[in-house]
Image (cartoon, rainbow, N blue to C red; front, top):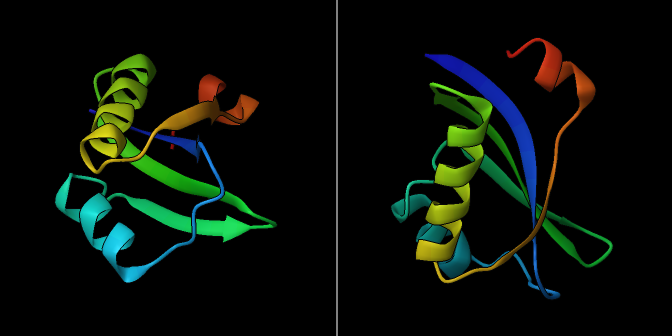
Length: 84
């Protein structure tokens, strides 16, 4: 499997609380680093999967399982051309 790097931007102006962090971890986002900057909540992922699409879909599923909604996905060109 290949490890892919991408960022999920969550909907709303969420605060990174211990409860949200725990819910994300328990939902399977243990390969993601959550954070907030200027009111934007994001999670940087380094996820192993068979494809980039599978990595993104599984991360979105895990975030939804934790009770959050994804607004968009951000991927750098280098991640598409050459996975980490």
